[in-house]
Image (cartoon, rainbow, N blue to C red; front, side, top):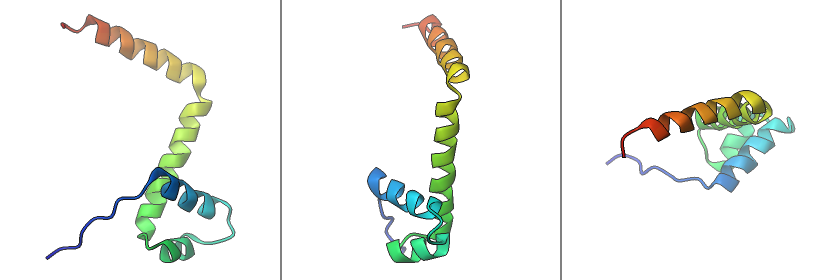
Length: 77
């Protein structure tokens, strides 16, 4: 039998990423303490940073959202 996948809450993921970003602990230390694979911590960190980049890039994302909304409105119902 294979391992069962664990599900992590958004709060747990955020706490893990913030622990790494605080630079008080390494990714390896945080992963070991929380029982998470190091690669998973790196993925969460990258997703977190990408989300921040998109949030700071307000005008371009708003234009993209408007373009997608216009495309959706053109689709047949």
